[in-house]
Image 1 (tube, rainbow over the protein chains, first blue to last red):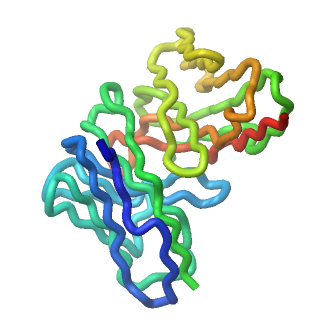
Image 2: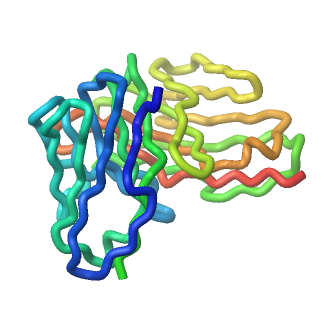
Length: 114
Length: 113
């Protein structure tokens, strides 16, 4: 049982380039989330999805787009990368009820924008 | 604005010591507080607390919530080098009108042999 899988694990981009981070979960979870983690700032929610075909903004959505075309996949896109987007990105999923199902996290994607 | 503050941000102790990590919060419509342990990669779930004064325990780790004073502590007794990690506190709060987790900055705990 793989749980939550993120690809790629590492990526270096130049300013202005675009890329897509992929998150896949095999637990049949309804809710999926994208967080970024920066030193001294903990985890901050970028976007989330409460089901296939739906997405919503979190705390820090600017500069990112997301799509949830299939229940098991949640994609995070950067259209024009900026150095401020250098961070570690974590995907997470759960059933939707935090009391019944704490978040399950992927292993993260370390992104550097030069 | 909802916020979660952890202290200390960094702590270095010797193996066998007991440590206490702190988490204070201000969130709208509190529902639960969670503790996670993060070693090199993905955070892993430790505890969820919803009721004040009830201790959750797992081996050498324990946690308690005080809903009146708006804080929680995580205790680790007889620390081992494998306890070295970043410990994250998170609280269910309101983000953009929806119930979501708000994370603190984390406490980096280092256990020296």
